[in-house]
Image (cartoon, rainbow, N blue to C red; front, side):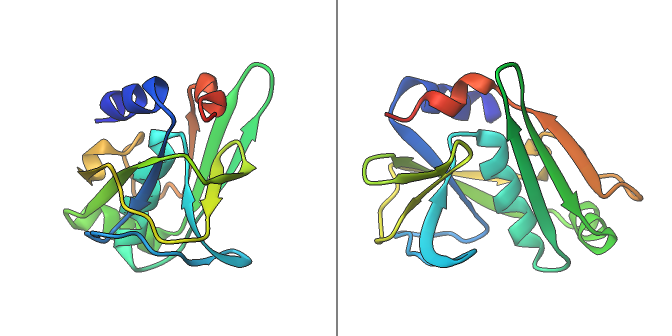
Length: 153
C-alpha cells in the first residue's frame, strides 16, 4: 500500500491525511496550537497517524529530521499502545487530498483551516505500518524517501 501512496504523491500535487475514522468530509480539529487539518507528503507518517490514533489508548509522538542526505522519522510510544497494536486488528484510513490551499508548517506537515473532501480513501491495517510493533520496543526509526519533501507545489 505504501508503494501506491508513494506513486500518488510523486505524480501530483497531493498530500495524505491519516485518520482512524471513516469520513465523508474532513473537518479541522485541534492540532498542537491551532484548529486545522494536518496532512503530509509521506505515506509512512499518514499510515502511522491513522493506525496509532485507532489505538485510543496510550500515547504516540514523533520527531522528524531532514538534511541534505537523509530524511528520518522517529516514532515514540508506550507499552500500552504497543500492546494494543499487537492485540487488535486495527483499521485506519489514509485520505488522498489535493494540496491546493495547504500551507507548509514543516516539510513533514502541511495545514489547512477549512473543511475539505478527499479525492480517495484507502483503508489500511497495522500490516501497512513501516515497522512491526514489538513488545518491549517503544521507539522506531524509519528512513523516508527524501524526494517526497519537495513534491508539493
